[in-house]
Structure formats: C-alpha cells, structure tokens
Picture 1 (cartoon, rainbow, N blue to C red):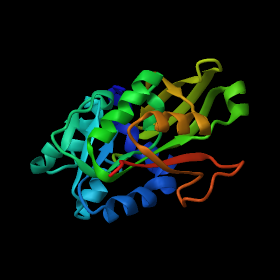
Picture 2: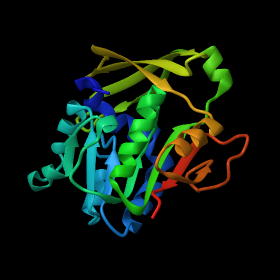
Picture 3: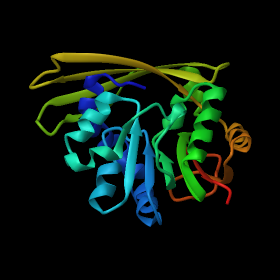
Length: 250
C-alpha cells in the first residue's frame, strides 16, 4: 500500500504513542534472539528496523511504499541503504534467505484476497531457511465495532519533532460479507492551528481464528501457535491480538 507523503511524514509521532508500547519489546526480543538474518515485511519508517540495526542485528526490510522508505532513509546511514527493498511482498523476490521473517502491525490485513494471502505465505516460505520462523499479527475482530463503525473519531493529538501540531481522526465502515473494513484517516497539522489537511482511505481484511489456521495449513508453512497477545498467552475471549507464529519445515 502506497502511503501519501503526509502519512509518512507524521507516521512515527502518531504510532510512537498509539502502538509502540504494545508490540515493540516483543518484536525486538525476537529479532535480537534470531541466530541469523531477519527480514521485516512492511518496514515502513523503521520503527523496529532502526532500533534493531543500532543494536547490531543483521536485519533487512521490504516495503511497497516509496514515501515510507524515503522517511526511513533520512535516519539511516547510506551504507545501509542496500538493506532496504521497495517491493510488494506478495511478489517478494530478494536474493537472501532468513532465519526470522516478521510482518508486524497488521501488515497481513492489507492483503485482501485469498489468492494473494496464499501467495504471500508462499513467498515468505521461499525466503526462510529450513526451520526458520515467521511471525505476524492481525487484530481480533471487534464485532460490535465492525457493525457500528466509526465516524470522525479523534484518536491522536500531539506534536512532531519540529513542534508542529498534529491530530488524526478516523472513520470506518465494514462490509460483513467480504470481511473488509474501509478506513479513512484525516490528518490535520500546522504551527499554531490545524491549517493543513490530508485524507487517506484504504481497505483492511479482518480474520477469524480458524480462517487463519486454514490459510496456514494451505501454505508451505507449519503453524506453531496462535497467541492472544504479545506476552504469548493463550487466546481468550477478550484477546485483542492474533499473534501467529509459524515455522518452515526442516
């Protein structure tokens, strides 16, 4: 998914508050424990990638968005640019294999069709070493939220590193038959007032537990476990995450 420049520009300041506290430690621990190279699919502006590289990880990243990679490169040494690939993960082709591949923060939810989902999983398997691990997370559907939707909900307000005021509102409607939620994000920013505005709309698939299990079963990967959170607790009725851990057969 290609992000517009105003999303990439403010991505880090928004998701540092919205997301990092939930998943950062989990993925960083997995990256640093990997015995060999790691690939992050949907590397974006480098929320994990930059931290892992600073700590000495042998990590690579792929993203479909040139705008997101452009922001990432502003914080990256030029000698490490070759660690990044501008590609659609559905057609992933990198001349490397990995001990660990991760697809954090709902990346798989942007893969809408079953055909593309299975091709994505096949490409992941092709780029894993035998015995290697693949980890992704998607959200557990909130059925009431899916049915009722959202209308201009303000879910972020703050400042970027340059002192610009930034806020975001979200609108969401869902197609229950296709299991697709259409999300519209409105970003407002300015020096003293919100003088600038950009709007971005995209679709996200939501999944259910057994659907995920069947998808993995149809792929070249073996399902290790689906956990209910980033502490790797069992799925419970109130779980918010599907944390899917797979292995490539030896």
